[in-house]
Length: 304
Image (cartoon, rainbow, N blue to C red; front, top):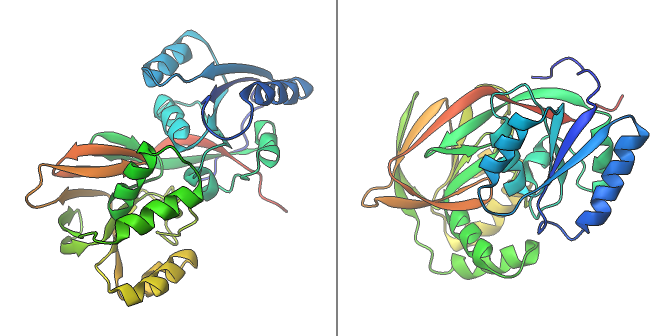
Protein backbone atom coordinates (compact mmCIF):
# COMPACT_ATOMS: atom_id res chain seq x y z
CA UNK A 1 0.00 0.00 0.00
CA UNK A 2 1.40 3.39 -0.99
CA UNK A 3 0.71 6.18 1.49
CA UNK A 4 0.42 9.89 0.68
CA UNK A 5 3.63 11.82 0.10
CA UNK A 6 5.20 12.44 3.55
CA UNK A 7 6.15 15.86 4.82
CA UNK A 8 9.81 16.70 4.29
CA UNK A 9 11.95 14.51 6.51
CA UNK A 10 14.53 16.83 8.06
CA UNK A 11 16.28 14.91 10.84
CA UNK A 12 17.61 11.60 9.54
CA UNK A 13 19.45 8.83 11.38
CA UNK A 14 21.74 6.56 9.35
CA UNK A 15 22.57 3.17 10.88
CA UNK A 16 25.84 1.88 9.44
CA UNK A 17 27.38 -1.56 9.66
CA UNK A 18 31.15 -0.98 9.64
CA UNK A 19 31.88 -4.35 7.98
CA UNK A 20 29.26 -4.47 5.20
CA UNK A 21 30.09 -3.65 1.61
CA UNK A 22 33.44 -2.54 0.19
CA UNK A 23 32.94 1.22 0.56
CA UNK A 24 34.71 3.40 3.12
CA UNK A 25 32.23 4.31 5.85
CA UNK A 26 34.06 7.59 6.51
CA UNK A 27 33.67 8.59 2.86
CA UNK A 28 30.06 7.42 2.92
CA UNK A 29 29.27 9.52 5.99
CA UNK A 30 30.82 12.56 4.33
CA UNK A 31 28.78 11.97 1.18
CA UNK A 32 25.52 11.48 3.10
CA UNK A 33 26.14 14.54 5.25
CA UNK A 34 26.80 16.66 2.15
CA UNK A 35 23.63 15.35 0.45
CA UNK A 36 21.58 16.20 3.51
CA UNK A 37 23.10 19.64 4.03
CA UNK A 38 22.50 20.60 0.39
CA UNK A 39 18.81 19.81 0.75
CA UNK A 40 18.09 21.19 4.20
CA UNK A 41 18.35 17.90 6.10
CA UNK A 42 20.46 17.00 9.11
CA UNK A 43 22.32 13.67 9.10
CA UNK A 44 23.03 11.73 12.31
CA UNK A 45 24.99 8.45 12.38
CA UNK A 46 24.79 5.29 14.48
CA UNK A 47 27.30 2.44 14.11
CA UNK A 48 26.43 -1.17 14.91
CA UNK A 49 28.90 -3.15 17.00
CA UNK A 50 27.51 -6.68 17.06
CA UNK A 51 26.69 -6.35 20.78
CA UNK A 52 23.10 -5.56 21.87
CA UNK A 53 22.56 -3.62 18.65
CA UNK A 54 18.76 -3.72 18.78
CA UNK A 55 18.56 -2.52 22.40
CA UNK A 56 21.09 0.23 21.76
CA UNK A 57 19.28 1.48 18.67
CA UNK A 58 15.89 1.39 20.40
CA UNK A 59 17.33 3.33 23.33
CA UNK A 60 18.69 5.98 20.97
CA UNK A 61 15.32 6.33 19.25
CA UNK A 62 13.72 6.93 22.65
CA UNK A 63 16.26 9.62 23.54
CA UNK A 64 16.23 11.53 20.25
CA UNK A 65 13.59 12.56 17.72
CA UNK A 66 14.17 11.63 14.08
CA UNK A 67 11.93 11.82 11.03
CA UNK A 68 13.28 8.65 9.38
CA UNK A 69 15.94 5.99 9.95
CA UNK A 70 18.09 4.64 7.12
CA UNK A 71 19.77 1.24 7.16
CA UNK A 72 23.12 1.59 5.37
CA UNK A 73 24.28 -2.01 5.13
CA UNK A 74 23.15 -5.48 4.15
CA UNK A 75 20.14 -7.63 4.99
CA UNK A 76 21.17 -7.96 8.64
CA UNK A 77 21.32 -4.18 9.10
CA UNK A 78 17.95 -3.79 7.37
CA UNK A 79 16.43 -6.43 9.65
CA UNK A 80 17.86 -4.67 12.72
CA UNK A 81 16.52 -1.22 11.81
CA UNK A 82 13.16 -2.61 10.71
CA UNK A 83 12.76 -4.34 14.10
CA UNK A 84 13.51 -1.09 15.90
CA UNK A 85 10.88 0.74 13.83
CA UNK A 86 8.23 -1.98 13.90
CA UNK A 87 4.78 -0.59 14.66
CA UNK A 88 6.02 3.01 14.90
CA UNK A 89 5.27 5.90 12.54
CA UNK A 90 8.99 6.30 11.74
CA UNK A 91 9.78 5.14 8.18
CA UNK A 92 12.67 2.90 7.16
CA UNK A 93 14.99 3.92 4.34
CA UNK A 94 17.57 1.55 2.80
CA UNK A 95 20.99 2.28 1.32
CA UNK A 96 21.98 -1.23 0.13
CA UNK A 97 25.60 -2.17 0.88
CA UNK A 98 25.48 -5.93 1.51
CA UNK A 99 25.96 -9.10 -0.49
CA UNK A 100 22.26 -9.80 -1.01
CA UNK A 101 20.13 -6.71 -0.34
CA UNK A 102 16.95 -8.71 -0.89
CA UNK A 103 14.29 -6.37 0.51
CA UNK A 104 15.74 -3.32 -1.22
CA UNK A 105 15.55 -5.16 -4.56
CA UNK A 106 11.89 -6.03 -4.03
CA UNK A 107 11.18 -2.39 -3.13
CA UNK A 108 12.78 -1.18 -6.36
CA UNK A 109 15.66 0.64 -4.62
CA UNK A 110 18.72 1.03 -6.89
CA UNK A 111 21.61 -1.25 -5.93
CA UNK A 112 24.29 1.27 -6.89
CA UNK A 113 24.93 3.46 -3.85
CA UNK A 114 25.20 6.67 -5.90
CA UNK A 115 21.81 5.94 -7.46
CA UNK A 116 20.27 5.00 -4.10
CA UNK A 117 21.38 8.17 -2.29
CA UNK A 118 18.62 10.37 -3.82
CA UNK A 119 16.14 8.30 -1.77
CA UNK A 120 17.22 10.56 1.11
CA UNK A 121 15.34 13.49 -0.36
CA UNK A 122 13.09 12.05 -3.10
CA UNK A 123 10.79 9.21 -2.10
CA UNK A 124 7.32 7.85 -1.55
CA UNK A 125 6.02 6.22 1.63
CA UNK A 126 4.80 2.62 1.53
CA UNK A 127 3.36 0.47 4.32
CA UNK A 128 4.25 -3.23 4.19
CA UNK A 129 3.66 -6.42 6.16
CA UNK A 130 6.30 -8.26 8.19
CA UNK A 131 6.54 -11.77 9.65
CA UNK A 132 7.25 -13.58 12.90
CA UNK A 133 9.11 -16.84 12.24
CA UNK A 134 9.68 -19.01 15.28
CA UNK A 135 9.61 -15.88 17.44
CA UNK A 136 12.07 -14.02 15.18
CA UNK A 137 11.25 -10.90 13.19
CA UNK A 138 11.46 -11.21 9.38
CA UNK A 139 11.03 -8.32 6.97
CA UNK A 140 11.65 -10.30 3.80
CA UNK A 141 12.33 -14.05 3.46
CA UNK A 142 13.11 -17.02 5.67
CA UNK A 143 13.68 -20.64 4.75
CA UNK A 144 14.39 -24.16 5.89
CA UNK A 145 16.28 -26.83 4.03
CA UNK A 146 19.03 -26.54 1.45
CA UNK A 147 19.36 -22.75 1.22
CA UNK A 148 19.38 -22.39 5.01
CA UNK A 149 22.29 -24.84 5.13
CA UNK A 150 24.20 -22.90 2.47
CA UNK A 151 23.55 -19.60 4.28
CA UNK A 152 24.90 -21.08 7.52
CA UNK A 153 28.06 -22.31 5.77
CA UNK A 154 28.42 -18.95 4.01
CA UNK A 155 27.98 -17.09 7.30
CA UNK A 156 30.80 -19.09 8.90
CA UNK A 157 33.14 -18.65 5.95
CA UNK A 158 35.77 -16.00 5.35
CA UNK A 159 34.80 -15.17 1.76
CA UNK A 160 31.82 -13.08 0.64
CA UNK A 161 30.15 -12.50 -2.70
CA UNK A 162 28.13 -14.60 -5.21
CA UNK A 163 31.12 -16.78 -6.10
CA UNK A 164 31.51 -18.03 -2.53
CA UNK A 165 27.79 -18.78 -2.30
CA UNK A 166 27.83 -20.80 -5.54
CA UNK A 167 30.91 -22.73 -4.43
CA UNK A 168 29.30 -23.68 -1.09
CA UNK A 169 25.99 -24.57 -2.76
CA UNK A 170 27.78 -26.87 -5.22
CA UNK A 171 29.62 -28.63 -2.40
CA UNK A 172 26.52 -29.07 -0.24
CA UNK A 173 24.27 -30.23 -3.08
CA UNK A 174 26.20 -33.48 -3.34
CA UNK A 175 24.79 -35.80 -0.73
CA UNK A 176 22.10 -33.42 0.56
CA UNK A 177 19.07 -35.29 1.98
CA UNK A 178 15.69 -33.46 1.84
CA UNK A 179 13.73 -33.40 5.10
CA UNK A 180 10.09 -34.27 5.70
CA UNK A 181 7.79 -31.41 6.69
CA UNK A 182 4.27 -31.27 8.10
CA UNK A 183 2.72 -27.87 7.36
CA UNK A 184 -0.57 -26.72 8.85
CA UNK A 185 -1.90 -23.35 7.68
CA UNK A 186 -5.14 -21.49 8.24
CA UNK A 187 -6.29 -22.92 4.87
CA UNK A 188 -4.76 -26.35 4.33
CA UNK A 189 -2.36 -29.06 5.49
CA UNK A 190 0.57 -30.43 3.49
CA UNK A 191 3.01 -33.21 4.31
CA UNK A 192 5.98 -34.47 2.36
CA UNK A 193 9.67 -34.14 1.61
CA UNK A 194 11.11 -30.85 0.42
CA UNK A 195 14.53 -29.89 -0.85
CA UNK A 196 13.80 -26.36 0.32
CA UNK A 197 10.93 -24.55 2.06
CA UNK A 198 10.84 -20.76 1.78
CA UNK A 199 8.64 -18.52 3.93
CA UNK A 200 8.11 -15.57 1.62
CA UNK A 201 6.70 -12.14 2.32
CA UNK A 202 8.32 -10.91 -0.89
CA UNK A 203 9.61 -12.15 -4.24
CA UNK A 204 13.35 -12.29 -4.71
CA UNK A 205 16.43 -13.59 -2.94
CA UNK A 206 19.50 -11.38 -2.92
CA UNK A 207 20.93 -13.79 -5.51
CA UNK A 208 18.11 -12.66 -7.87
CA UNK A 209 16.35 -16.03 -7.59
CA UNK A 210 12.62 -15.27 -7.90
CA UNK A 211 11.20 -17.68 -5.36
CA UNK A 212 7.74 -16.13 -5.05
CA UNK A 213 6.54 -14.50 -8.28
CA UNK A 214 3.51 -12.22 -7.88
CA UNK A 215 3.84 -12.20 -4.08
CA UNK A 216 2.90 -8.89 -2.47
CA UNK A 217 4.56 -7.16 0.48
CA UNK A 218 1.31 -5.54 1.57
CA UNK A 219 -1.54 -8.01 0.96
CA UNK A 220 -1.85 -9.36 4.52
CA UNK A 221 -0.69 -12.82 3.42
CA UNK A 222 2.53 -14.74 2.87
CA UNK A 223 3.51 -17.75 0.81
CA UNK A 224 5.22 -21.04 1.64
CA UNK A 225 7.25 -21.93 -1.46
CA UNK A 226 8.26 -25.58 -1.70
CA UNK A 227 10.83 -27.20 -3.95
CA UNK A 228 10.22 -30.93 -3.74
CA UNK A 229 12.97 -33.54 -4.27
CA UNK A 230 14.04 -33.69 -7.91
CA UNK A 231 16.38 -35.78 -10.06
CA UNK A 232 19.72 -34.25 -10.95
CA UNK A 233 18.70 -33.98 -14.60
CA UNK A 234 15.90 -31.56 -13.61
CA UNK A 235 18.22 -29.10 -11.82
CA UNK A 236 19.01 -26.89 -14.88
CA UNK A 237 15.30 -26.53 -15.67
CA UNK A 238 14.45 -25.62 -12.06
CA UNK A 239 17.23 -23.01 -11.98
CA UNK A 240 15.96 -21.54 -15.22
CA UNK A 241 12.44 -21.26 -13.79
CA UNK A 242 13.78 -19.60 -10.63
CA UNK A 243 15.57 -16.90 -12.59
CA UNK A 244 12.70 -16.18 -14.99
CA UNK A 245 9.70 -15.69 -12.66
CA UNK A 246 8.44 -19.15 -13.63
CA UNK A 247 8.54 -20.86 -10.22
CA UNK A 248 5.04 -22.30 -10.67
CA UNK A 249 5.90 -23.86 -14.06
CA UNK A 250 8.04 -26.64 -12.60
CA UNK A 251 6.67 -30.08 -11.73
CA UNK A 252 8.71 -29.94 -8.52
CA UNK A 253 7.42 -26.69 -7.02
CA UNK A 254 4.29 -25.59 -5.18
CA UNK A 255 3.12 -22.58 -3.16
CA UNK A 256 0.78 -22.40 -0.17
CA UNK A 257 -0.75 -19.00 0.55
CA UNK A 258 -1.79 -18.25 4.12
CA UNK A 259 -1.91 -15.84 7.08
CA UNK A 260 -0.41 -18.21 9.62
CA UNK A 261 1.36 -21.56 9.58
CA UNK A 262 2.83 -24.21 11.83
CA UNK A 263 5.81 -26.18 10.50
CA UNK A 264 6.92 -29.49 12.00
CA UNK A 265 9.94 -31.59 11.09
CA UNK A 266 9.22 -35.11 12.38
CA UNK A 267 11.96 -36.50 14.60
CA UNK A 268 13.67 -33.12 15.07
CA UNK A 269 13.49 -30.92 18.17
CA UNK A 270 15.47 -28.13 16.46
CA UNK A 271 15.84 -27.11 12.85
CA UNK A 272 18.08 -24.73 10.93
CA UNK A 273 16.24 -21.64 9.65
CA UNK A 274 17.69 -18.61 7.90
CA UNK A 275 15.81 -15.39 8.59
CA UNK A 276 16.63 -12.36 6.43
CA UNK A 277 20.06 -13.84 5.74
CA UNK A 278 20.88 -14.82 9.34
CA UNK A 279 21.01 -18.54 10.32
CA UNK A 280 19.26 -19.71 13.51
CA UNK A 281 18.65 -23.05 15.21
CA UNK A 282 14.99 -22.90 16.24
CA UNK A 283 12.86 -25.33 18.26
CA UNK A 284 10.06 -27.11 16.44
CA UNK A 285 7.26 -26.76 15.66
CA UNK A 286 7.89 -23.34 14.08
CA UNK A 287 5.01 -20.88 14.15
CA UNK A 288 4.78 -18.28 11.37
CA UNK A 289 2.45 -15.29 11.53
CA UNK A 290 1.88 -12.23 9.33
CA UNK A 291 1.97 -8.77 10.89
CA UNK A 292 -0.10 -6.69 8.46
CA UNK A 293 0.83 -3.07 7.81
CA UNK A 294 3.50 -3.08 10.52
CA UNK A 295 6.38 -1.30 8.78
CA UNK A 296 6.60 1.99 6.86
CA UNK A 297 9.31 2.16 4.20
CA UNK A 298 10.65 4.81 1.84
CA UNK A 299 10.66 3.78 -1.82
CA UNK A 300 11.68 5.56 -5.03
CA UNK A 301 9.22 7.86 -6.75
CA UNK A 302 7.79 6.01 -9.78
CA UNK A 303 9.11 7.16 -13.14
CA UNK A 304 6.58 9.05 -15.24
